[in-house]
Structure formats: structure tokens, C-alpha cells
Image (tube, rainbow, N blue to C red; front, side, top):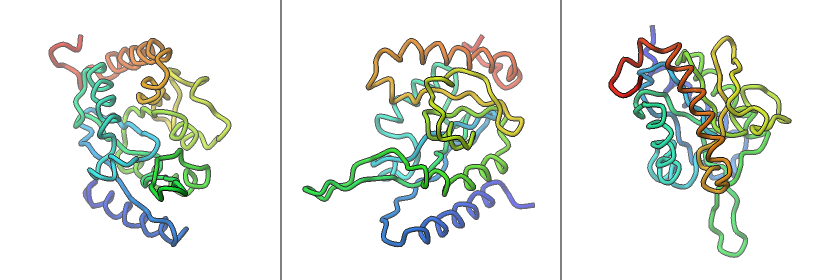
Length: 208
């Protein structure tokens, strides 16, 4: 039987080739998953940005700092979870004057192109809990591009029998301070779920 790491490596190679074939003129910058998922939790963001490409791992820089706060609020360490993105390459736009790239939200086409890879990741990893951050992974897993995180945040749902909590992206709190209390309330809902259902995983000082 293939090891998880080998299966993921093979999946990412297939995905890379498929994506490159979809648009041979696009300068793709891929960033794949990170973490050991010691606690059975999978966290799915939207897509890597400039900082992630530079360091070759998801959620670094400002996003990484917010993720650290997010983890600490749930009494988790980064290696406790499997971190990935719905789209595994940097979506960018080019400034016509400077010629420089800047981050942008993935398009519906990009999300759909990447969905099979995300679904296969979940199949390989077999998480007990999925946390999605922002609109992109929520819409991807639900296969519904009309959904909005504003209506779904903090609500318990399912993906193929796996408990799924959609949450605001931590970075959104930076730009909209009014979301801070809402985000914290949602995290408490998740924390209580973890405490109830993952007790054997979380026998650690400070969690109770």
C-alpha cells in the first residue's frame, strides 16, 4: 500500500500537469500542503499568495501570523493539522503600468479545475474534521458558487459524512474589524465541538 506522502506527491504531480495544460501561457506558481495532521483536522484556505510562493508553503507572512493566532485559540499547533488550499497555485493579475503581479481571488473556472485535487486530498488524508476559511473552499466543497460565507460561518455542516465548519478567513478580520467578535464566537463553537468529539486527541494542559 502506498504511503500517504507518496500518494499526495503523485496527486500533486498529476494536478500540476493538468493545470499547466489548461493554459500554457500562464506563469503558474504552485504551493502545496503542509502539516502532519496529528489531530485529524484539515484546514482549507483559498489560494496561495506572493509570500506563500516565496516560502513554498501555505499560510505564511501575514496570513501565517493570523493562522498562528487561529491555532492558539483552538489550543493547536501547526503540525496538528493538515493545511492546504482549494486552489494550489497563485492567482494573480498584472499591473499594466508596472508589470508586477498582485494577488486576486480565484475564478470559478480555477476553483473547478482544482476541485478534483482537493477532493482527492480529502480522500487520502481522511480527516475527522474539515475547517474551511472564506468563500472559495466553501463554494468548492458545496459545488455551489452562489454561497456566501456570511450566511454559513460557524455553522456545522458535512462533506461526504465528514463534519465541516465554514469560517471567515482570518485575514478578513484585518480588513474588517467588525468581524473580530463574530470570528471569535465561531472559533468558540469549533473549540467546543473539538472538546466534545476529539477529547482523546486533546488531553493536554490548558485545553480544558
